Amino acid sequence: MTPSDEPSAPAGDAHVADVAIAGGGLAGSAIAAVLARKGFEVVLIDPHAVYPPDLRCEKLDASQVATLERTGLAGMVLPAASRYASIWVPRFGRFIEKHAETQYGIPYDTLVNRVRATIPAGVRRVAGKVTAIANGEQQQALLLSTGETVRARLAVIANGLNSGLRNGLGIVRKDVSRCHSVTIAFDVRPQHGGTFGFPALTYYGERPGDRCAYFTLFPVPGAMRANLFAYREAADPWLRDVREQPEATLHRTLPGLRRVIGPIEVVGPVKVRPADLYESHGCLLPGVVLVGDAFATSCPAAGTGTNKVFTDVDILCNVHVPEWMRTPGMGVDKLASFYRDPVKAACDQFSMRKAFSLRSDSIDVGLAPGMRRWSRITKGAARAVRSAVRRPQRQAA
Image (cartoon, rainbow, N blue to C red; front, side, top):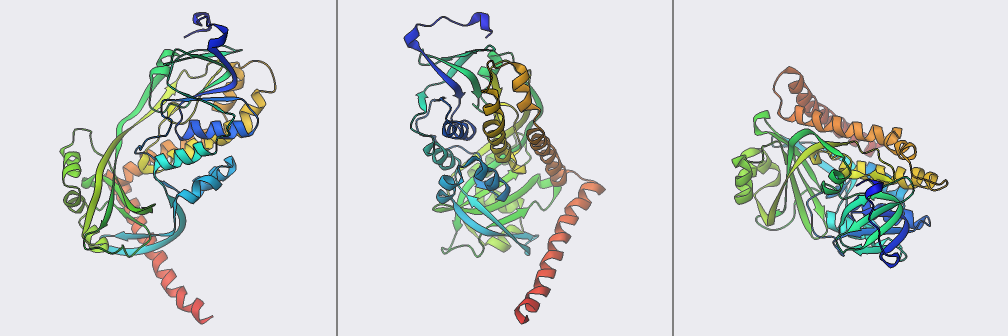
């Protein structure tokens, strides 16, 4: 919708704010929390008063936690997660490395709702969807499913994969890789009771023909969570098998896994989420900025999606919005500074490169990908040997 199409609204129907955010997932909720703490008047629009369960990010690594700390939200989020300080890495049924790294397991809905709990009371929340935006250089009019109109200097589109708003603004989705990867997630426990003998585990695909990147097992509050990342078409019968017979399909696909984790029992539903890689083109518009998946998606197997979200939140809220608000207007010259920000650009480019390099290393045949797979094994084994040699020396010292 163009500025000339902007509907007239009764004075009582409009609410004027500095920033209106369409979408209350991780990106939208975090932006609302950070900007409101900086003193901006914010409206957050999302249909869910409490964010529902959703298969997305389920753990945070050290780099993501560091970026989260820069937004000031880590203190509320991390206490709700399960912390673990090492990841055991087996290959072909044997442990070759115990990698020291602190990570946090947390369901996506818990993560989002924890971030929402940090939003100051002064933020106006609207339970509804943004159906259209009339944008311009001075003011944006957001039309809601409730029949209400919200007006703001800046509109942030953070509604993830929903393309309706972007289409209405003339923004074009460009597919980079359809069904690039598939995420399978479920809770597990040892079949014969007890607990697993490791804090967390990452098991890489054994053969390119299995079309698997890796299987990871890690704690979340109250459960042990499994994520399996595969490269399959949406209609592949293997996905039906993994839904209906998850234990048998998992061990058939990764036969050496049983040797290190033993017989397991899947608890609860098996969730499957195919992921497309796409970018948004034509998004440089007055008064509107896209963040997170609304701008460009990432591959869950590569684990860079949360980095992209937190990076967008960090630089948008701590660098660009405060600068934009110092002067009148919200033209494309201002908004371009966010899209071409070197930190954002580097993060987006790294995410896309890693998506394709991990897929190639996992499923491509030939000398180069084979050497990379073998290098991953030998490097891990070498680190394990060095650690074993140094341990007695440190104890003696």
